[in-house]
Image 1 (cartoon, one colour):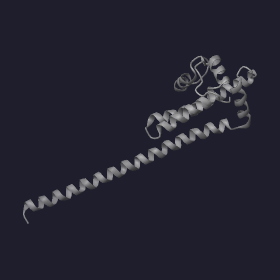
Image 2 (image 1 turned 60 degrees about the vertical axis):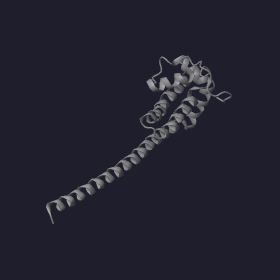
Image 3 (image 1 turned 90 degrees about the horizontal axis):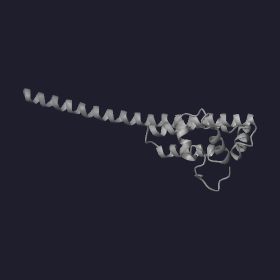
Image 4 (image 1 turned 180 degrees about the horizontal axis):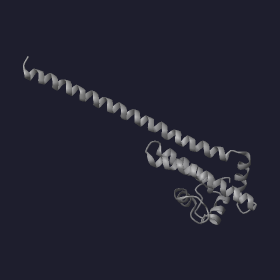
Length: 167
């Protein structure tokens, strides 16, 4: 066996080692991507559960129904409760919207979900009245404020996104 033969054997061993390393990196990328998707979905589900927990309480549901019909007909206490309800729900919705921007994974579905629930809260007579009256004082932050402005306008007078809808 010559020195050249030993060199060829070493070259084959190193090439197979590189091939095995490349396969392992590909498997690790695939595993990391799967884990990221699971974590992203879990975070969206936690935000959704937080939102639903707030919204589905019977007293809150009643207030939401009355407030969506007419903000001006609510008592002062109920106006504050209605405003607080929207301001508490919006961060959950916006977090889902933010997760949509972090990745292209299910981006359209998450964005649609965020817009749908923002419309449910604000694109109705009471929500529009509230936004027009309290926009400047509302503690809703940048992305949520922008989302509401895009849907119903800064003054609440942008045309309805969904016509013939029950408030």
